Each structure stands twice: as structure tokens, then as C-alpha cells.
Length: 253
Image (cartoon, rainbow, N blue to C red; front, top):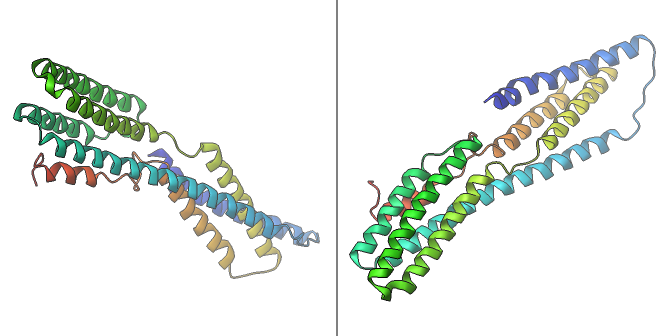
């Protein structure tokens, strides 16, 4: 949560400070009679900053979309497994259903951004899978005719669990912090330049500086939130999995 405090409070203050320092520098230059003329690079600097922002925003949005796709893939696999399991004998069908109830109970306990908690949750799923595999092997020993169907069941369950593992580990595959730091530094430099030019040319309406500051604050906060799927406001939506569980009467409505 300290990161949110920084992006919501500290960063806007730094951006305002950079614009104010630009105005102070321009005022001193005017008092000393220093001449300054635009070099024509100002628009290029702003364009480069905008390009870097758009690249980072697209990358963060893509990562968020990939996490949603993983959730959809898990929901599809769960639905397929439970639908096929209806054709099994009652004992095996009930065992598959109990596995997914246990899996869902672990799954809905989101571990947050802590790596140790994520690893602990993955270990719980691994142990749950080991118990299921042992039960399925015993079922094959009792009824060898189920060997092929259970092999398919185990393969699909492994695929679903693999997607879950990738989802959990994706919480730490985000835009490198150095990129966000570069974006902040560039925005501070441009804020300084906007403040300097506004004061140097005697602009009393700070519409450009204000617009730039608001856009930078909003965009960097959105990028940071997309990079924080465990604690941010923009998180993966697990409603698909919940609806699948309910459709097979494994959860109360």
C-alpha cells in the first residue's frame, strides 16, 4: 500500500514541485536578462514521453488481458472435466466433484502479492492433486476399464492446474520498475520545462501544465494498478469459475 501512497500523493506533489521550480528558474532568468529561445526539441521530447507511456500502458494492459484469459481457460477446463465426469460411475463422479470443491476453496483465498503465500498456496494445490491422483490410481486398480478415461481426466486436471500456477506467478511478471522510474523522471523534466516556458512567456493561464500533470498522474496510476493485480483495483475477474461451479451445483447460489 506504500506504493499507492507514493503514486497518489508523493508523485503528484513532485510533479507540481517540478513545474514550480521551472517557473522559479524562468523568473530568475528574466531578472538577469538571460535570453532563451525554443530549440524545436520541446515537441519531440513530449512525443518521446507519450510514446514511452503508450508502450508501457499497452504492455501492462496486455499482461492484465493475459491473466483474464488464464481465468477463462481454467473455467473452460473445469467445465469440461465436470461435464465428462457425469459419465463416470457415481463414486468416481463424486470424487471429482469433491476435488473441485476443495480446489475452489483454496483458489478463492487469494494470497495477495506475497511470494511466500503464493508458494504456500501452490503447495496446497499440489498436495490436493497428489491425493486425487492416488485415488484415481486405486480406481484403475479396481476397474482397469477406466484406465483411458482416467488418463484423460488426469491430463485435463494437470492442464487446469498448470494454468492456475501460471496465473499465480504472473502476479510478479509486471513492467520492470525501472520503466516506471524513467516515466516519472521524464514527466518531472517535462513538468519543469512546461513551468519554465509558461513563466518565461508570461502565461497566466496554466492550462497546458495542468493538463499534462493530470494526464501523467492518471496514466502512471493506471499503469501501476495494472501492475498490481493482487492488491490493485484492476484485478482478474474470477466470476467465470464461480459460475461454472454453481452451474454444476457445487456451490450455493
